[in-house]
Length: 221
Image (tube, rainbow, N blue to C red; front, side):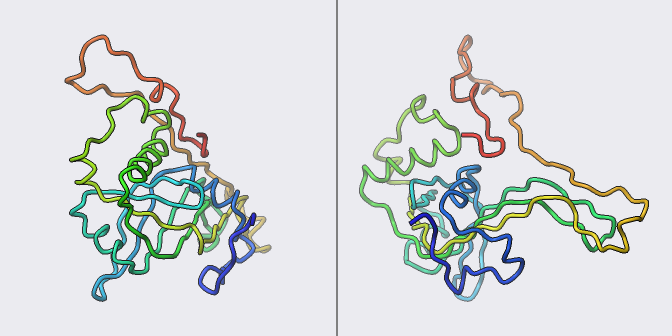
């Protein structure tokens, strides 16, 4: 199927015209970054934790230290919500009330499961690494057995999911349109800066291809 099935939990109540459920749109947003926020509840206390992720088809992988409370709790099968947001611009209206943001976002609901098989675990770590810096996996030492044991990896099926997008100029009230106030969109982008070498780096080592080619702007991958 080209689209994810809407559920009562993913159907948008506010501004439904901004919603999207097709796979290309959802995947494009997920692939444009590598930072998500994971929400879950433990003993009545809500937590929202930022973490990196990698997408492989209709699976999202997240990882962390084996001692992580978040990963330990999620591995038990408790409900989880994952959000990803890309901020594209500030929408400056003539009135304070109609100021807004241009954005692309995804909300996923479900339950995560533990990745235990070593080959799949290594694959998941490659997926996450490549999502963050494409080409980096081929340049670095692979995790050894001890490092794999010290790392927890979870898989979350991309099934109950929705995207929401706002684009375009401000939407002012008709009576405000002639006010002598500037209105429009201030675009925002994320751009890589100049690489800073490790002070202990051996002399003469050139920048690797993954760094020179890095362009995590507007989802370029």
